[in-house]
Image (cartoon, rainbow, N blue to C red; front, side, top):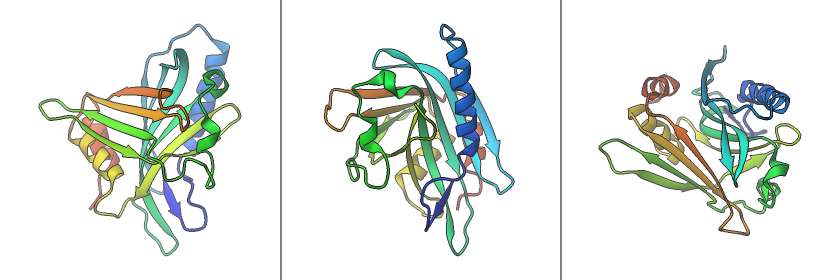
Length: 209
């Protein structure tokens, strides 16, 4: 993921968008299928790394295809700083009305500055950790939506860095809750099982200083 002064949106998630589109087509062709969660690790020639979890989960009571993509990019140049964080891709958002996805979209989103995303990590033998974040939003493909959060990877401290480091140290579950901006009772809740992914997360953030 890149943090570009002229274009702050990620340019390292093209693989995930392509994979997500393919999964959407597959789900449409097999509407009764309930695929198991699948992990995919990728690394670009430029050194950008991602670790993605793909699954069908219940959102607002409806089975929904989602991809949660964790990413880390250590690139630093005069105009570009690598970032780290994660994105949450949601398929067929029209079926999830009345959740207001559009309120999260773009640089002029009405949700800017509002901490409507809550992350909780369940850890064995340690107290649970949680943090509230301000998500950004966009439409990567018609009918789909992506929530994202990222920070410059060279920063010594950030919520995003802390979350990835905790996952690299070991965790059992990574829970995401995104709250509708106008109805606090309306929530998208996604639980990602991470109990056996410690090594993969260590690889994802390897090289962080």
